[in-house]
Image 1: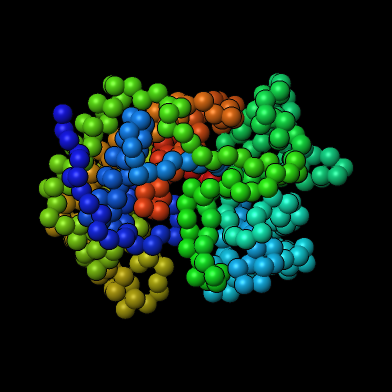
Image 2: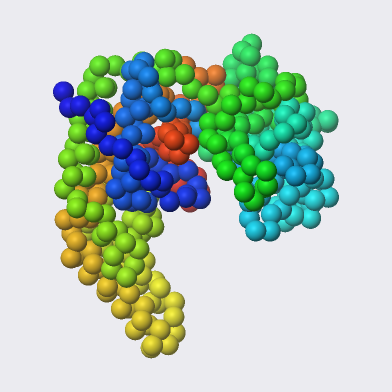
Length: 398
């Protein structure tokens, strides 16, 4: 059997990311260190599912909207709600309904959700701390709750905050909480620090110190690995893909080709991979070259002067020549990505087979949960089935 024990050590942090990344994308973001982090995250999740001691924490990812940051300002102590812009240089903090109207009046739907969050989340939030979560529902529509979006049919309650519809059978604790609440929220992150601009995120946050109130449906995001059935066949398949990922990674002397050619390939690669998810194709060097050429040709077509067109054309030619000159490196990069993704999918399938408080559906068809988040060394990674949830999400946003 292939042994992974002490194979890789992480010695540096991956570049700070502005959003949650798929685990198999880490090598694209940060080369060798990214591969190490992806490898160790998957390996520690594998150990957790085996019932062994593990350094990873796992949570269920909820498909809510919007994401809201809330809590008591670390300096003033005042309760606020905000969108993700809270940590910008000029943050939009909402302490009152007037603040919400002033900052977000152009988006009535967001105003309604933030207003509900302002009124209700402070009923459960500890006196200290800043948190982030996804708004899942606004309770049952009524005269006292005109913004409600929870529906009842076929013996269940349902809410659809984004792509997935969540359902809970009448008589279950989650159905009762959903019906009673004015707002539902899945909290996943806590922020620590003495100043708002200096706060650091801590993922898979412990929310056991939150208060309880019937107006707020606190949806538990924690996941117990022991609730999943990790079969011997699944474990063998996982180990096979991990071995192939390591072998492919060992072929590369470095990931410098991703930064070469006068054009960083990080975003090009991730955009191309997302495109292959949309059209259900297999990533290839030829497909990638065509993708880059098409994207950069659009930049050529945008400009008007001959000088500008020549400069943009030179950028295009250098980028495609760089791909031609590093065909094997890009081919190996896609191979690494494929095997990390396949290993992740084995874990994701196992995680999704556990029992959940909600039934998940998309356009009336039963689907798996959105996915899970595995956190290692306070660095999160998405474990999401790109062929199911990501494809559905792209379809919905098209």
